[in-house]
Image (cartoon, rainbow, N blue to C red):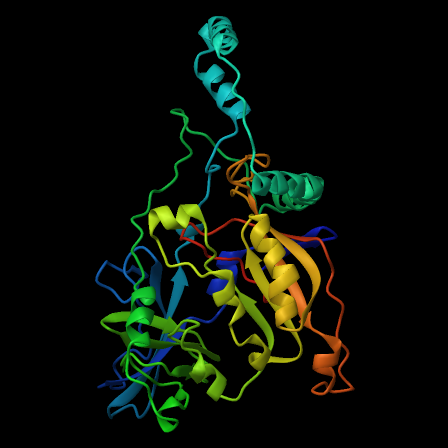
Length: 424
């Protein structure tokens, strides 16, 4: 379970635990020539994958879990090897805030220069006194963001404090231990890029497939070695109780049990529509337009009108819960609530907030930072009553969704990994 603590303000989550409990285990049959003199079990040390391994360092850590042998004592037998993969805990090692508040910086500096505290304070006061005050004019978007922040500030601060204190008491969170040189021992990880976005772009330009070829590809059976897959706009489904390792264009990926995926983007969602399924919950994390993304060219963004054209009404079951991640731009939040959801016949039922903290319980950004906030918003909505009425089972009671809840967690250092919502 990803939920560590559940209090009235919301939840304290363990994202790492959620990933590792998804049963990333590979099960394979291997021929062996065992006799009654050979051991019936094989024990292997835990191994860290090198850069040429299936996932590439440092994303995963590999440890064979156990090996059992069945068959006759005098003849060759078949080994059933189960290998377990776990996500590297270093990717959730956020020991310090990304931006240290100015007050804390001054305090750290004064601690380093205990003998010069008086002179330091005088120097600061003089230099500040000589600076000319700048006249800062805020645009309407910035004013709206400041007003919204003022409304939810106490909710974020008070609720987070309660959950963080509970996490510190239980030992899930722990105080930061500074070393003599002032560092906290953070590990800098050489993060490997994932090529899924490039593969999506390639898959989009493949020739159109006919109806027969658009059927879901099911990976059946618990015994399966690495599966080579061609690029295709096709749903890949793993119905087994173990993970499958698939290879796409030379890169290996783990597909967890009882799951499926479509290598595509919203411009090619026909295979998803053709599978004939509808969903009780749909989580959307759009690549919103913003200046930072445009400057960095990290990924392609979508305009509001492109997001609006997503075929959500065709994918949503009766009373489907729609959850959309929204950046802290008020323009995007208003668009979701006032334009996007109404166009999908979805009624807004709640706003939740993901509060990002360090392992010691500090906000990753100063709460009142004008540039980056330590929280993100997610808007929850339900398919409207009239739309869902024709499809609804009268015996099913839809539970209410609580409003103004907090999700507090240590974020993954990999870009844009959102916390798991399944346990909530």
